[in-house]
Image (cartoon, rainbow, N blue to C red; front, side):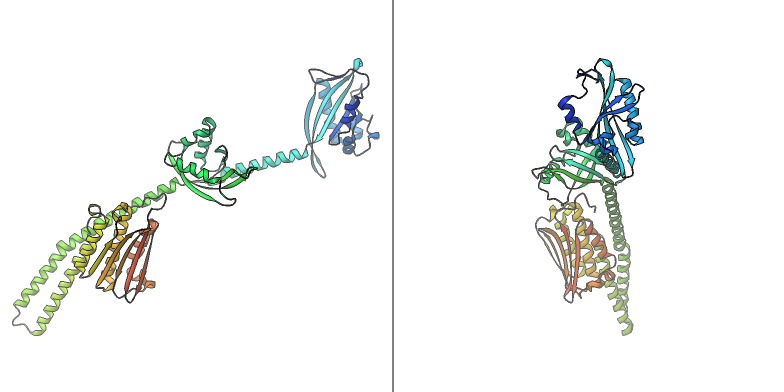
Length: 496
Protein backbone atom coordinates (compact mmCIF):
# COMPACT_ATOMS: atom_id res chain seq x y z
CA UNK A 1 0.00 0.00 0.00
CA UNK A 2 1.16 3.53 -0.75
CA UNK A 3 -0.39 6.67 0.75
CA UNK A 4 -0.26 9.72 -1.49
CA UNK A 5 0.18 13.34 -0.33
CA UNK A 6 -3.58 13.87 -0.80
CA UNK A 7 -4.46 11.14 1.67
CA UNK A 8 -5.40 8.59 -1.05
CA UNK A 9 -4.40 4.96 -0.51
CA UNK A 10 -3.20 3.07 -3.60
CA UNK A 11 -3.08 -0.72 -3.31
CA UNK A 12 0.23 -2.12 -4.62
CA UNK A 13 -1.14 -5.67 -4.56
CA UNK A 14 -4.26 -6.85 -6.49
CA UNK A 15 -5.66 -8.50 -3.39
CA UNK A 16 -7.90 -6.05 -1.48
CA UNK A 17 -7.45 -7.98 1.79
CA UNK A 18 -4.48 -6.33 3.49
CA UNK A 19 -3.46 -9.28 5.57
CA UNK A 20 -3.30 -9.19 9.31
CA UNK A 21 -3.76 -5.42 9.49
CA UNK A 22 -6.99 -5.59 7.60
CA UNK A 23 -8.29 -8.48 9.72
CA UNK A 24 -7.40 -6.63 12.94
CA UNK A 25 -9.19 -3.49 11.76
CA UNK A 26 -12.35 -5.40 10.94
CA UNK A 27 -12.26 -7.09 14.33
CA UNK A 28 -12.32 -3.74 16.23
CA UNK A 29 -15.62 -3.84 18.21
CA UNK A 30 -15.75 -0.13 19.23
CA UNK A 31 -15.44 1.26 15.69
CA UNK A 32 -17.42 0.56 12.51
CA UNK A 33 -14.90 -0.43 9.83
CA UNK A 34 -16.11 -0.88 6.26
CA UNK A 35 -14.96 -0.84 2.67
CA UNK A 36 -17.22 0.84 0.13
CA UNK A 37 -16.93 -0.06 -3.56
CA UNK A 38 -17.71 2.67 -6.05
CA UNK A 39 -19.82 1.23 -8.88
CA UNK A 40 -19.44 2.26 -12.49
CA UNK A 41 -22.81 3.99 -12.35
CA UNK A 42 -21.78 5.93 -9.21
CA UNK A 43 -23.63 3.75 -6.75
CA UNK A 44 -21.97 2.65 -3.52
CA UNK A 45 -21.84 -0.93 -2.25
CA UNK A 46 -20.54 -2.58 0.90
CA UNK A 47 -17.46 -4.57 -0.13
CA UNK A 48 -16.75 -5.60 3.44
CA UNK A 49 -17.66 -4.56 6.98
CA UNK A 50 -17.21 -5.58 10.60
CA UNK A 51 -19.64 -6.52 13.38
CA UNK A 52 -20.19 -2.89 14.43
CA UNK A 53 -21.77 -2.18 11.02
CA UNK A 54 -23.98 -5.27 11.40
CA UNK A 55 -25.09 -3.93 14.78
CA UNK A 56 -26.01 -0.53 13.32
CA UNK A 57 -27.76 -2.11 10.33
CA UNK A 58 -29.55 -4.68 12.47
CA UNK A 59 -28.72 -7.62 10.15
CA UNK A 60 -25.92 -10.21 9.71
CA UNK A 61 -22.81 -9.45 7.63
CA UNK A 62 -23.90 -11.98 5.02
CA UNK A 63 -26.79 -9.66 4.18
CA UNK A 64 -24.55 -6.59 4.06
CA UNK A 65 -21.61 -7.53 1.83
CA UNK A 66 -22.27 -6.63 -1.81
CA UNK A 67 -25.43 -4.67 -1.04
CA UNK A 68 -26.07 -1.02 -1.81
CA UNK A 69 -26.01 1.35 1.17
CA UNK A 70 -29.68 2.25 0.78
CA UNK A 71 -30.64 -1.43 0.99
CA UNK A 72 -28.87 -1.94 4.30
CA UNK A 73 -28.90 1.26 6.35
CA UNK A 74 -31.65 3.50 7.64
CA UNK A 75 -32.57 6.13 5.01
CA UNK A 76 -31.18 9.14 6.92
CA UNK A 77 -27.86 7.33 7.63
CA UNK A 78 -27.57 6.03 4.04
CA UNK A 79 -28.28 9.49 2.63
CA UNK A 80 -25.67 11.12 4.90
CA UNK A 81 -22.93 8.57 4.00
CA UNK A 82 -23.78 8.70 0.29
CA UNK A 83 -23.49 12.52 0.22
CA UNK A 84 -20.10 12.50 1.93
CA UNK A 85 -18.83 9.56 -0.17
CA UNK A 86 -19.54 11.65 -3.26
CA UNK A 87 -17.44 14.50 -1.85
CA UNK A 88 -14.61 12.12 -0.94
CA UNK A 89 -14.52 10.40 -4.38
CA UNK A 90 -14.78 13.71 -6.25
CA UNK A 91 -11.92 15.32 -4.33
CA UNK A 92 -9.80 12.18 -4.07
CA UNK A 93 -8.82 13.27 -0.55
CA UNK A 94 -9.55 11.98 2.92
CA UNK A 95 -12.25 13.74 4.89
CA UNK A 96 -13.98 13.59 8.28
CA UNK A 97 -17.36 14.70 9.50
CA UNK A 98 -19.72 14.31 12.46
CA UNK A 99 -23.49 13.89 12.29
CA UNK A 100 -26.13 13.53 14.99
CA UNK A 101 -29.31 11.53 14.41
CA UNK A 102 -32.56 11.63 16.39
CA UNK A 103 -33.62 8.06 17.12
CA UNK A 104 -36.63 6.96 19.21
CA UNK A 105 -34.19 6.04 21.98
CA UNK A 106 -32.56 9.50 21.90
CA UNK A 107 -29.84 11.41 20.09
CA UNK A 108 -26.91 9.42 18.69
CA UNK A 109 -23.85 11.10 17.25
CA UNK A 110 -21.35 9.45 14.85
CA UNK A 111 -17.93 10.69 13.81
CA UNK A 112 -16.76 9.31 10.47
CA UNK A 113 -13.45 9.33 8.56
CA UNK A 114 -13.37 8.42 4.83
CA UNK A 115 -10.20 7.52 2.92
CA UNK A 116 -10.30 6.99 -0.91
CA UNK A 117 -8.48 3.83 -2.16
CA UNK A 118 -7.42 2.95 -5.77
CA UNK A 119 -6.91 -0.72 -6.57
CA UNK A 120 -3.96 -1.32 -8.86
CA UNK A 121 -3.80 0.08 -12.36
CA UNK A 122 -7.36 -0.79 -13.23
CA UNK A 123 -8.57 2.24 -11.30
CA UNK A 124 -11.36 0.49 -9.45
CA UNK A 125 -12.15 2.84 -6.62
CA UNK A 126 -12.88 1.96 -3.05
CA UNK A 127 -13.37 4.06 0.09
CA UNK A 128 -12.23 2.90 3.51
CA UNK A 129 -14.58 4.12 6.23
CA UNK A 130 -14.19 4.36 9.99
CA UNK A 131 -17.15 5.44 12.12
CA UNK A 132 -17.30 5.63 15.91
CA UNK A 133 -20.04 6.52 18.38
CA UNK A 134 -19.38 10.09 19.62
CA UNK A 135 -22.62 10.43 21.59
CA UNK A 136 -20.89 10.62 24.96
CA UNK A 137 -18.55 13.30 23.68
CA UNK A 138 -21.56 15.23 22.37
CA UNK A 139 -23.26 14.96 25.75
CA UNK A 140 -20.12 16.13 27.52
CA UNK A 141 -19.80 19.04 25.10
CA UNK A 142 -23.42 20.03 25.58
CA UNK A 143 -23.06 19.71 29.37
CA UNK A 144 -19.93 21.86 29.31
CA UNK A 145 -21.72 24.43 27.16
CA UNK A 146 -24.66 24.38 29.58
CA UNK A 147 -22.35 24.88 32.55
CA UNK A 148 -20.53 27.68 30.73
CA UNK A 149 -23.85 29.38 29.99
CA UNK A 150 -24.89 28.95 33.61
CA UNK A 151 -21.62 30.46 34.83
CA UNK A 152 -22.03 33.33 32.38
CA UNK A 153 -25.58 33.93 33.59
CA UNK A 154 -24.45 33.85 37.21
CA UNK A 155 -21.59 36.13 36.28
CA UNK A 156 -23.84 38.86 34.94
CA UNK A 157 -26.54 38.57 37.61
CA UNK A 158 -24.68 38.05 40.89
CA UNK A 159 -24.47 41.23 42.99
CA UNK A 160 -20.92 40.26 44.01
CA UNK A 161 -17.84 39.02 42.20
CA UNK A 162 -17.24 35.25 42.26
CA UNK A 163 -13.73 33.92 41.65
CA UNK A 164 -11.51 30.83 41.82
CA UNK A 165 -8.08 31.49 43.32
CA UNK A 166 -5.30 29.13 42.18
CA UNK A 167 -3.25 28.65 45.34
CA UNK A 168 -0.26 27.13 43.54
CA UNK A 169 0.27 30.03 41.15
CA UNK A 170 -1.58 32.71 43.16
CA UNK A 171 -3.64 33.63 40.12
CA UNK A 172 -7.34 33.84 39.30
CA UNK A 173 -8.77 30.93 37.29
CA UNK A 174 -12.28 32.36 36.95
CA UNK A 175 -13.90 35.69 37.67
CA UNK A 176 -17.46 36.85 37.13
CA UNK A 177 -20.26 38.84 38.64
CA UNK A 178 -21.29 42.44 39.07
CA UNK A 179 -18.55 44.51 40.70
CA UNK A 180 -15.70 42.27 39.51
CA UNK A 181 -13.80 45.08 37.78
CA UNK A 182 -11.00 45.14 40.34
CA UNK A 183 -10.46 41.39 40.15
CA UNK A 184 -10.59 41.52 36.34
CA UNK A 185 -7.92 44.24 36.45
CA UNK A 186 -5.83 42.03 38.75
CA UNK A 187 -6.28 38.99 36.48
CA UNK A 188 -5.36 40.85 33.29
CA UNK A 189 -2.36 42.37 35.07
CA UNK A 190 -1.16 38.97 36.21
CA UNK A 191 -1.45 37.62 32.69
CA UNK A 192 0.82 40.44 31.55
CA UNK A 193 3.21 40.69 34.51
CA UNK A 194 2.95 37.24 36.10
CA UNK A 195 2.19 36.35 39.73
CA UNK A 196 4.90 38.70 40.98
CA UNK A 197 2.93 41.61 39.56
CA UNK A 198 -0.09 40.90 41.79
CA UNK A 199 1.14 43.27 44.51
CA UNK A 200 0.60 46.21 42.14
CA UNK A 201 -3.17 45.78 42.37
CA UNK A 202 -3.38 45.74 46.16
CA UNK A 203 -3.07 48.71 48.49
CA UNK A 204 0.54 48.77 49.77
CA UNK A 205 -0.64 48.80 53.39
CA UNK A 206 -2.81 45.70 52.77
CA UNK A 207 -0.41 43.60 50.68
CA UNK A 208 1.53 41.95 53.59
CA UNK A 209 -1.78 41.00 55.20
CA UNK A 210 -3.03 39.53 51.89
CA UNK A 211 0.09 37.35 51.54
CA UNK A 212 -0.25 36.14 55.14
CA UNK A 213 -3.92 35.36 54.48
CA UNK A 214 -3.05 33.30 51.39
CA UNK A 215 -0.52 31.35 53.44
CA UNK A 216 -3.19 30.65 56.05
CA UNK A 217 -5.57 29.32 53.36
CA UNK A 218 -3.38 26.22 53.02
CA UNK A 219 -4.57 25.15 56.48
CA UNK A 220 -8.24 26.07 55.97
CA UNK A 221 -10.52 23.08 56.74
CA UNK A 222 -13.07 21.99 54.14
CA UNK A 223 -16.45 23.64 54.63
CA UNK A 224 -15.08 26.52 56.71
CA UNK A 225 -15.49 30.10 55.46
CA UNK A 226 -12.89 32.76 56.15
CA UNK A 227 -13.41 36.52 55.72
CA UNK A 228 -10.90 39.24 54.96
CA UNK A 229 -11.15 42.86 53.86
CA UNK A 230 -8.58 44.68 51.73
CA UNK A 231 -8.36 47.36 49.07
CA UNK A 232 -7.98 46.61 45.36
CA UNK A 233 -6.98 48.95 42.56
CA UNK A 234 -9.95 49.71 40.30
CA UNK A 235 -10.16 50.64 36.62
CA UNK A 236 -10.18 54.34 37.42
CA UNK A 237 -6.95 54.26 39.42
CA UNK A 238 -8.50 54.43 42.89
CA UNK A 239 -8.30 51.80 45.62
CA UNK A 240 -11.67 50.40 46.67
CA UNK A 241 -12.29 48.27 49.75
CA UNK A 242 -13.65 44.76 49.19
CA UNK A 243 -14.87 42.15 51.68
CA UNK A 244 -13.90 38.62 50.62
CA UNK A 245 -15.50 35.38 51.86
CA UNK A 246 -13.49 32.32 50.85
CA UNK A 247 -13.69 28.53 51.23
CA UNK A 248 -11.79 25.49 49.90
CA UNK A 249 -13.01 24.45 46.43
CA UNK A 250 -10.61 21.59 45.60
CA UNK A 251 -7.39 19.88 46.73
CA UNK A 252 -4.56 18.17 44.85
CA UNK A 253 -3.55 14.50 45.17
CA UNK A 254 -1.46 15.33 48.24
CA UNK A 255 -4.45 16.93 50.00
CA UNK A 256 -3.10 20.47 49.71
CA UNK A 257 -5.53 23.25 48.86
CA UNK A 258 -5.55 23.73 45.09
CA UNK A 259 -8.44 26.10 44.38
CA UNK A 260 -10.25 28.51 46.69
CA UNK A 261 -13.76 29.70 45.87
CA UNK A 262 -14.32 33.31 46.84
CA UNK A 263 -17.10 35.89 46.82
CA UNK A 264 -15.97 39.50 46.78
CA UNK A 265 -18.18 42.48 47.57
CA UNK A 266 -17.16 46.07 46.90
CA UNK A 267 -18.12 47.95 50.07
CA UNK A 268 -16.53 51.28 49.12
CA UNK A 269 -19.92 52.90 48.57
CA UNK A 270 -21.14 51.55 51.90
CA UNK A 271 -18.01 52.99 53.55
CA UNK A 272 -18.68 56.34 51.90
CA UNK A 273 -22.28 56.45 53.11
CA UNK A 274 -21.24 55.47 56.63
CA UNK A 275 -18.54 58.14 56.62
CA UNK A 276 -21.06 60.74 55.46
CA UNK A 277 -23.36 59.64 58.31
CA UNK A 278 -20.50 60.01 60.79
CA UNK A 279 -19.61 63.42 59.37
CA UNK A 280 -23.24 64.49 59.64
CA UNK A 281 -23.37 63.22 63.22
CA UNK A 282 -20.22 65.20 63.99
CA UNK A 283 -21.71 68.35 62.49
CA UNK A 284 -24.94 67.82 64.42
CA UNK A 285 -22.99 67.37 67.64
CA UNK A 286 -20.98 70.52 66.95
CA UNK A 287 -24.21 72.44 66.37
CA UNK A 288 -25.63 70.94 69.57
CA UNK A 289 -22.58 71.99 71.57
CA UNK A 290 -22.70 75.48 70.10
CA UNK A 291 -26.41 75.73 70.92
CA UNK A 292 -25.82 74.52 74.48
CA UNK A 293 -23.05 77.07 74.90
CA UNK A 294 -25.34 79.84 73.68
CA UNK A 295 -28.12 78.75 76.05
CA UNK A 296 -25.64 78.57 78.93
CA UNK A 297 -24.42 82.09 78.21
CA UNK A 298 -27.99 83.36 78.02
CA UNK A 299 -28.89 81.70 81.32
CA UNK A 300 -25.82 83.12 83.02
CA UNK A 301 -25.79 86.60 81.51
CA UNK A 302 -29.51 87.34 81.28
CA UNK A 303 -31.76 85.03 83.27
CA UNK A 304 -29.22 84.75 86.08
CA UNK A 305 -28.96 88.52 86.39
CA UNK A 306 -32.74 88.88 86.53
CA UNK A 307 -32.89 86.34 89.33
CA UNK A 308 -30.14 88.13 91.21
CA UNK A 309 -32.08 91.39 90.84
CA UNK A 310 -35.24 89.74 92.14
CA UNK A 311 -33.34 88.27 95.07
CA UNK A 312 -31.91 91.69 96.02
CA UNK A 313 -35.38 93.25 95.79
CA UNK A 314 -36.70 90.64 98.24
CA UNK A 315 -33.85 91.35 100.62
CA UNK A 316 -34.62 95.08 100.50
CA UNK A 317 -38.31 94.33 101.06
CA UNK A 318 -37.38 92.29 104.11
CA UNK A 319 -35.22 95.09 105.50
CA UNK A 320 -38.04 97.57 104.98
CA UNK A 321 -40.65 95.17 106.25
CA UNK A 322 -40.69 96.17 109.91
CA UNK A 323 -44.37 97.02 109.69
CA UNK A 324 -45.22 93.90 107.66
CA UNK A 325 -47.07 91.06 109.25
CA UNK A 326 -45.45 87.75 110.08
CA UNK A 327 -47.28 86.02 107.22
CA UNK A 328 -45.89 88.52 104.73
CA UNK A 329 -42.38 88.05 106.04
CA UNK A 330 -42.77 84.26 105.68
CA UNK A 331 -43.83 84.65 102.06
CA UNK A 332 -40.82 86.88 101.40
CA UNK A 333 -38.50 84.26 102.94
CA UNK A 334 -40.09 81.49 100.86
CA UNK A 335 -39.71 83.51 97.63
CA UNK A 336 -36.08 84.23 98.48
CA UNK A 337 -35.45 80.51 99.05
CA UNK A 338 -37.03 79.67 95.70
CA UNK A 339 -34.87 82.26 93.98
CA UNK A 340 -31.73 80.83 95.62
CA UNK A 341 -32.68 77.35 94.41
CA UNK A 342 -33.36 78.68 90.91
CA UNK A 343 -29.97 80.40 90.85
CA UNK A 344 -28.26 77.15 91.92
CA UNK A 345 -30.02 75.18 89.21
CA UNK A 346 -29.05 77.74 86.59
CA UNK A 347 -25.41 77.55 87.69
CA UNK A 348 -25.50 73.73 87.47
CA UNK A 349 -27.28 73.65 84.09
CA UNK A 350 -24.99 76.34 82.67
CA UNK A 351 -22.01 74.26 83.70
CA UNK A 352 -23.48 71.07 82.27
CA UNK A 353 -24.27 72.83 79.02
CA UNK A 354 -20.85 74.48 78.77
CA UNK A 355 -18.24 71.97 80.07
CA UNK A 356 -14.45 72.47 80.01
CA UNK A 357 -12.60 71.96 76.73
CA UNK A 358 -11.67 68.34 76.07
CA UNK A 359 -9.07 69.19 73.45
CA UNK A 360 -7.14 71.64 75.62
CA UNK A 361 -7.07 69.51 78.80
CA UNK A 362 -7.13 65.89 77.59
CA UNK A 363 -9.73 63.30 78.59
CA UNK A 364 -8.37 62.54 82.08
CA UNK A 365 -8.12 66.17 83.27
CA UNK A 366 -11.32 67.21 81.50
CA UNK A 367 -13.29 64.44 83.27
CA UNK A 368 -11.84 65.38 86.66
CA UNK A 369 -12.42 69.11 86.16
CA UNK A 370 -15.93 68.60 84.89
CA UNK A 371 -17.05 66.08 87.53
CA UNK A 372 -15.62 68.04 90.48
CA UNK A 373 -16.97 71.34 89.16
CA UNK A 374 -20.37 69.72 88.70
CA UNK A 375 -20.28 68.44 92.31
CA UNK A 376 -19.58 71.87 93.72
CA UNK A 377 -22.44 73.48 91.85
CA UNK A 378 -24.88 70.58 92.51
CA UNK A 379 -23.88 70.27 96.22
CA UNK A 380 -22.77 66.67 95.62
CA UNK A 381 -19.66 64.92 96.87
CA UNK A 382 -18.07 63.57 93.66
CA UNK A 383 -15.11 61.19 93.50
CA UNK A 384 -13.17 60.80 90.26
CA UNK A 385 -10.76 57.98 89.42
CA UNK A 386 -8.96 57.74 86.07
CA UNK A 387 -6.42 55.00 85.32
CA UNK A 388 -3.24 55.71 83.32
CA UNK A 389 -3.64 55.55 79.57
CA UNK A 390 -6.84 57.58 79.36
CA UNK A 391 -5.17 60.40 77.44
CA UNK A 392 -4.00 57.88 74.82
CA UNK A 393 -7.61 57.21 73.78
CA UNK A 394 -8.22 58.65 70.31
CA UNK A 395 -10.17 61.92 70.01
CA UNK A 396 -13.34 60.36 68.57
CA UNK A 397 -13.84 57.86 71.38
CA UNK A 398 -12.65 60.31 74.03
CA UNK A 399 -15.34 62.78 72.91
CA UNK A 400 -18.06 60.13 73.06
CA UNK A 401 -16.99 58.95 76.54
CA UNK A 402 -16.99 62.52 77.80
CA UNK A 403 -20.49 63.12 76.41
CA UNK A 404 -21.76 59.94 78.09
CA UNK A 405 -20.29 61.11 81.41
CA UNK A 406 -21.89 64.52 80.91
CA UNK A 407 -25.31 62.97 80.20
CA UNK A 408 -25.01 60.52 83.10
CA UNK A 409 -24.22 63.28 85.64
CA UNK A 410 -27.10 65.32 84.23
CA UNK A 411 -29.42 62.39 85.01
CA UNK A 412 -27.95 62.12 88.53
CA UNK A 413 -28.74 65.78 89.14
CA UNK A 414 -32.26 65.62 87.69
CA UNK A 415 -33.52 62.24 88.91
CA UNK A 416 -31.36 60.60 91.58
CA UNK A 417 -31.71 62.95 94.59
CA UNK A 418 -28.22 61.76 95.49
CA UNK A 419 -25.64 63.05 97.96
CA UNK A 420 -22.62 61.31 96.47
CA UNK A 421 -21.48 60.27 93.00
CA UNK A 422 -18.46 58.43 91.69
CA UNK A 423 -16.88 58.58 88.22
CA UNK A 424 -14.35 55.88 87.22
CA UNK A 425 -12.57 55.57 83.86
CA UNK A 426 -10.59 52.33 83.43
CA UNK A 427 -8.32 51.35 80.54
CA UNK A 428 -7.55 47.62 80.60
CA UNK A 429 -8.73 44.82 78.32
CA UNK A 430 -11.40 47.32 77.32
CA UNK A 431 -12.34 50.93 78.10
CA UNK A 432 -14.96 51.24 80.85
CA UNK A 433 -16.61 54.41 82.14
CA UNK A 434 -18.66 53.94 85.32
CA UNK A 435 -20.93 56.61 86.85
CA UNK A 436 -22.46 55.58 90.19
CA UNK A 437 -24.66 57.46 92.67
CA UNK A 438 -26.26 56.77 96.06
CA UNK A 439 -29.67 58.16 95.13
CA UNK A 440 -33.14 56.69 95.17
CA UNK A 441 -32.34 54.11 92.50
CA UNK A 442 -33.83 53.63 89.07
CA UNK A 443 -36.39 51.18 87.76
CA UNK A 444 -34.32 49.72 84.90
CA UNK A 445 -37.41 48.56 83.00
CA UNK A 446 -38.67 52.15 82.89
CA UNK A 447 -35.27 53.78 82.32
CA UNK A 448 -36.01 54.87 78.75
CA UNK A 449 -39.23 56.57 79.86
CA UNK A 450 -37.71 58.27 82.92
CA UNK A 451 -34.48 59.39 81.25
CA UNK A 452 -36.08 60.38 77.93
CA UNK A 453 -33.74 60.59 74.94
CA UNK A 454 -30.63 60.67 77.12
CA UNK A 455 -30.17 56.92 77.59
CA UNK A 456 -30.90 55.92 73.94
CA UNK A 457 -28.50 58.67 72.86
CA UNK A 458 -25.73 57.25 75.05
CA UNK A 459 -26.34 53.74 73.74
CA UNK A 460 -26.28 54.93 70.14
CA UNK A 461 -22.96 56.74 70.72
CA UNK A 462 -21.34 53.62 72.11
CA UNK A 463 -22.90 51.24 69.57
CA UNK A 464 -21.43 53.23 66.67
CA UNK A 465 -17.98 52.55 68.14
CA UNK A 466 -18.62 48.87 68.80
CA UNK A 467 -19.44 49.39 72.48
CA UNK A 468 -22.42 49.22 74.81
CA UNK A 469 -24.15 50.92 77.75
CA UNK A 470 -25.54 48.99 80.74
CA UNK A 471 -27.57 50.57 83.55
CA UNK A 472 -28.59 49.02 86.87
CA UNK A 473 -30.64 50.51 89.68
CA UNK A 474 -31.63 49.40 93.18
CA UNK A 475 -32.57 51.15 96.45
CA UNK A 476 -28.90 51.89 97.10
CA UNK A 477 -28.49 53.93 93.92
CA UNK A 478 -27.89 53.66 90.18
CA UNK A 479 -24.83 52.48 88.25
CA UNK A 480 -24.20 53.17 84.56
CA UNK A 481 -21.35 51.40 82.72
CA UNK A 482 -20.26 52.38 79.22
CA UNK A 483 -17.83 49.96 77.54
CA UNK A 484 -15.72 50.34 74.39
CA UNK A 485 -13.20 47.95 72.79
CA UNK A 486 -9.58 49.07 72.86
CA UNK A 487 -9.60 49.23 69.05
CA UNK A 488 -12.47 50.71 67.07
CA UNK A 489 -14.55 48.62 64.60
CA UNK A 490 -12.67 47.70 61.40
CA UNK A 491 -13.15 50.14 58.59
CA UNK A 492 -14.81 52.84 60.71
CA UNK A 493 -13.70 56.16 62.06
CA UNK A 494 -16.30 57.38 64.47
CA UNK A 495 -16.97 61.09 64.61
CA UNK A 496 -17.56 63.08 67.76
